[in-house]
Length: 177
Image (cartoon, rainbow, N blue to C red; front, side):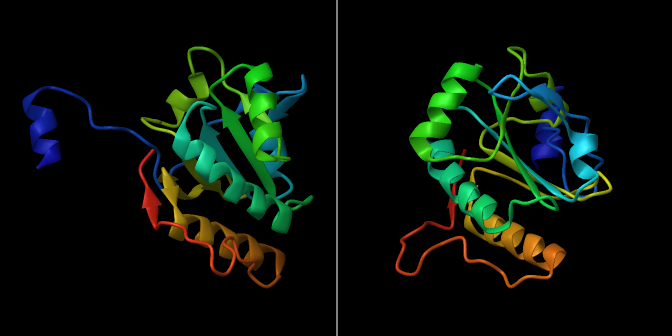
């Protein structure tokens, strides 16, 4: 029905990249003045790319859970990258406020990388396999999606799956971005 409606009003369908797509190149500065290249990072292993905006309440809710995944698996064989749609100063403040230790890259003002990935909302998360193929993607807070990322990283590393959510923690299944 949506496709038919979009054709009727001559709009393009949303083009967020889905599982099976090739991940576009990422070459961006990080919030601390360095530069990160996705192809180079993928040489070590899979990458979780989490796009966000510091003023987004769902991003503020989601990114600390991404940090838990980073603490459980982030090493030389797994990389977690935040991709901020804000300037370096605001991104550093956000990371400090929410306890984020994974690197955050800065998408330029016109969001070329966000656009290449077809983002319509944040947060949007992509799990990128070592060969550059997107294994999974989701928008907003997605409890099952984050648990799937944790299981995928555990399998890649040959480790037990680390829980993303603490016992007794009340967490919704989904929050739209």
